[in-house]
Length: 123
Length: 254
Image (cartoon, rainbow over all chains, first blue to last red; front, side):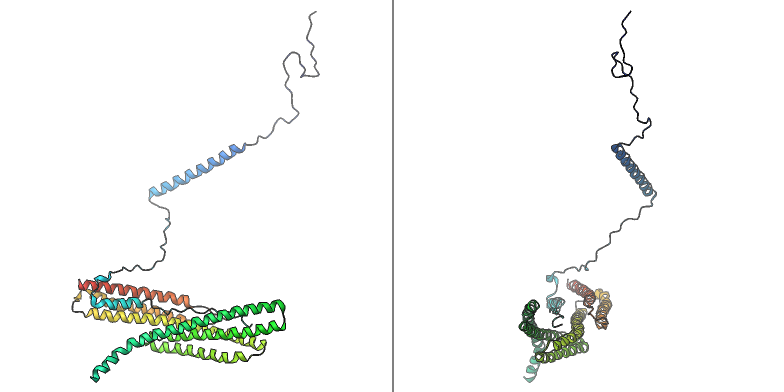
């Protein structure tokens, strides 16, 4: 009578034949797969790129049609009127003195500071 | 001979007078600056005495504070008076261009100078802090009027200066217009002169209206920045006129 290898049927791991039985885990069969954060990030980036592409396509098509978007007009900053300076030497001598006097008088403001008072003194 | 002497004095009066006015203003201004320094010294002394009184609350420190308060109020009035005097004298320079309005402003300034003098006769007589406090309250309310007069005077000074400059430019333009070298190519510019002149006058009128507006609030509403906008507009037109006139003169002579 040939020897048959002994197999302990109670302990499946201890199998002298060398093959293993699949261990059936007690966990439920169907589990929800969570998205990898990297993949999630890639998806978001993809959506943004796609949106930008669509917007750029719309803008390009609008420009081609001639309906340009409202351009941002640069508001001019108020500046003093630029008055050309005229060389003194070009002026005839008979009027030079008069012009100089008027030019000097233009800035002849009453140069006096208004005093600042503490009105709470004595109160 | 007599005619020569008469003419000599007649033509020499104006420049000497003008020089004296400038010197006089300079003297009054220096006096004001001196009084301002005095006020600042007294003010620091008053603050020190006040701090000592707050810290110790003693009779001596209270008396010291009372005396320093009187001193600082006295010097404040003197400073203010010297400022108003300088302002009044400063208005003389271009008074002839707008004598009526300038005279009115100068009378107002004189009125406040007298009032401040009167107050300085009263202040040394106070012997208790209650009377001094009442006086300080009255001064505070009157100061609104002083401020208005002050800025009205500054406005008037600015208007007078610009009117005088406009007048000088006009006189020069008239001289150049009648210059024998002038052909009729510049007639258009001379014809446009009244338009720019009107624009200057309008800006100055506007400045005057702003300054004359009565103050309704209990605190002073400073209108001077608005006045400055109008006078700057006038300046811009004046500069433009002068520049054009220079260009025309060069054109005529070249």
